[in-house]
Figure: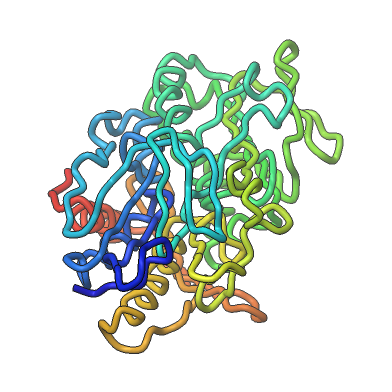
Length: 394
């Protein structure tokens, strides 16, 4: 059995290498799976998350617009059963990166190696009026609740608005506006409605001019009003007006908001963060604390906050841990690559492959929307469910 000295053990004592993984999103699931596959019988992998299960970001939109049921897109963590892996459903109360220990409402856990993959917390209350006068669709609960709201919507002025930067999955607001168009058309109320998209970007997908051009053309074709380089700063629930940072006011009947993103409070209190997020070596994802890594939305690595980038970062960390255990070849470094699918409506999906390298401008390659890419996106999801949860989906 592969072992490593236990700093709290007596002379000559040892224990299996314990890897503590905080968060079961793209990063945590991919890391745990790779470690289990490579050395599960010789590892003690503890995966901690407060949630009931995993939901893909694109599945939230499917539920919102009535294309899937909530029960069909939730992948319960109780189904995780891999060699060397223990899942703990708990809320993390504190993180000690020096001791590599966490306190949770289910007890305390320490480890030889800690990987922080807690993602970003979403804070609708940070935007005045959003909780009272609008709806957010970035949390699972918020997106699922919007299913009934949209089903009862009779038409009117709809704003899809971003309230802060950075925000997860930059294509998602554009996708939401386009899918909303289809939804209103199908219900026969598009002519009685107006859709506006407010984003803090000059173009929808900055790394890919071709993707941005295609989205802007789609907005124009569908009569979606585009407000670039702007943020929604507050809502007036009584007058139903959204105030933008530049002073512009937009009236609405339904507001769909991207809420403020923050690093989880337990990480702010831990000493891991600088300027709001966790700094890491962009090539290895190591933090300033020995044997502590950070991947995904919490990490300041220079890529967008999206699951595919967390997955790629997790692969690099897993390879490093596996190499340290004497398994596998020399680990590579993070290449900043990611693939994002973009819903264009009408059952067509585009794809952007983008690379973010430190010190260089990001480069993106766009594939035009097609039914074939829609099928490819479906395989993207089913393949990961099979890999992470060892079951077919749907």
